[in-house]
Structure formats: C-alpha cells, structure tokens
Image (cartoon, rainbow over all chains, first blue to last red; front, top):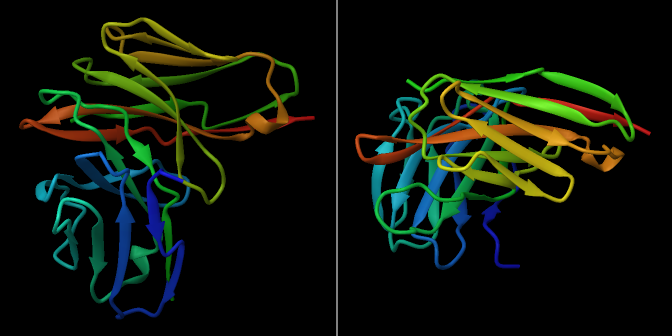
Length: 117
Length: 114
C-alpha cells in the first residue's frame, strides 16, 4: 500500500501525559499537513510542511503541540501535558508540488484517534 | 477569512434516489474545491477536485459543480446506494501569505436506506 499511513490508529492516555503520533506520507510528496477533527466537525488545519520546513502553524496549535519533519519524509506530532479537550481525530495528508505555489490534491491518512481520560 | 458551510447537515434518502449536497464558501478567490467522503472513524477519501477554471467534474455516479462567483458548489449523487452512506465534506484551499491553508465544511451526513 503506497498511501499515507499513520501510527498509532488509536491512542488512549491519561490527562497530563505526553503523546506522539507519526505520519508517513506518499513517498514522492513534498507537502505534508496535519489536521484535527472533533466529533461532528470538519477537519481543522493545524500545520503544514514543505519538505522539512514548517511553513505555517494555526493558532490552534498551542505551545503544547509541536510537529517535526526532520528529513522531509515522515512527520511527528507531539502533544505535551494532554488535556481532555485534545481528544480528537488527528489526520495527516500529503500532496505533491505541481509547480509554483498552487495547491494540489491532498491525500489523507486513516487518522489517529486520541482519547484523553 | 474563508468560511465553508454545508447544507444540510444530515440527509436520509431511500435507495435509488438522486440527491444534491450543497457547499458554500465566503471568499470566491479559490484555486480549487475538493469533495471528500469520510466513513465513521476513518480518514478522508478524495472524490472529486474541481479547478477554479472548471464548472464541473464527473466520476461515475458523482457530479460536482462549481460556481465561483456565487461561492457555491454542489455534489450530485445519482441512483444512491446504501454503500454511499457516509459523511461528505467539501474543502477549499487558499493561499495565506503565500502558503497553503485548507478550510473544510462541517460535512453532510448521508444515510441511504435500503
């Protein structure tokens, strides 16, 4: 399977613990995105990488959240000192660069469902 | 700030019926618009992408239209089947200071009754 993969698929943690999620994009895709989706809502943009550079961060991404893409391939999203309000589905997507700065089709992974008790 | 609205929030139809899902956006300066399907507890599957220069795209029983000037897109599903039951999301990317940002609607939850 050459699609976007995410690990783990489900994570249950206690409030105050740190969690880390991993996303492996489609191999030739330069752009990688993280989204958060709460129940009954559409995904909300969190952050965006082009290769290893983190080019934009939403104000939703508090200082407890950090994302990296150290070699321009896989990415990690870490949440420190988790709170119950962090419970959500965390989605990763990737896209190729067509040329210029035009957006392209985003391909989504299956998501990581986080439950904070 | 781009805002995307989807109406209705939920829809229940008998199998075989044709149906239309609506998506509206506030900023008409878009590059494209994408429709996704999401099954419960799962990620998103891309259905159709319409470039800003296009008026519609078709894939099988699905047809998506785009009217940039009015800020609207519709997803038409012909001859609905129980397997079409899912949440349908529209998404609009925009450039924000030169970098991409995608705004999603809240989705329409479709149930097709056998």
